[in-house]
Length: 393
View (tube, rainbow, N blue to C red):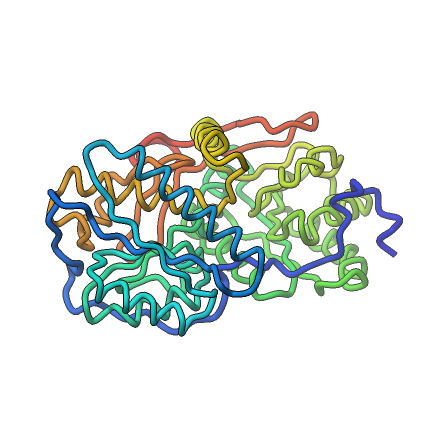
């Protein structure tokens, strides 16, 4: 049935649940025994950092990701000025018990901080394994449910993205927001993040509509979504779906059914410009989404390509950010660089996509730009903030 939809050929894929690697169920993190947990280091010696990567799972994708993460970490180490890092790489096989075991081995061998792993269940297991020794974990997950205690998440969170976009929408007179989401765990988490952002930013929640994550379910839900959105009086519709899932079809079917993006602002929780073919979709013209600072990320991407001959995986940038943060803290704070108070200092760090900082609850804030798809191109309509006291925060 979807064969008749006029989406670009390469984006006309079957509907899939939003399978963010970090969004898996996990146990509660373990709190450290004191409010400033973290080992003291000798900042004159190389800092032992354990990098946990998903190699060894038997999946080629995990092995490629592991190599990209290590490459980015080593690129960051080469960029440090006056700080030496002793990077020790451990394979987790993408498995929580294996990850916990290698993390304990790493700490026994002297690691003072753990960078990674990728998957949230593994990150949670690592945090539990090394909590009693006061070692902090800077995971690549984006799952806030595992954050806290000695576990931090470096991945961009739905909450951070929703806050940026809702605040901008309200500033532009588009603060009465209706949410559309699939009936899946990941998209329901996204829906809740949007609702929280609406409340925190003084916007108005116009309600929400959902659809079964199937071809028939989406087509059947379209008339009801349009009717509810119009009846709500919303001046913006916020979508949790991405272009590898339902968004290409929503962007076509909803306007055809009478929900015009020229009258009601479309906003995406995910990157609506990926893949690039999505930029040509008529229903996405004028839509907003958030993205890292394109100049900074472009610089990282170019340097990675020059060093390693390929395009970096998006998660690899988190490894660079982690090493950059560790290096900056060692340079500034010496032997207390890896304590909780140092990691969560308010001024934050400059990473591959802009400023970011770690919060006391283990989540993060990232300075994002607001972009619009206009004439089949990405246009930055509100630049990424340069500090946490500036616009956008």
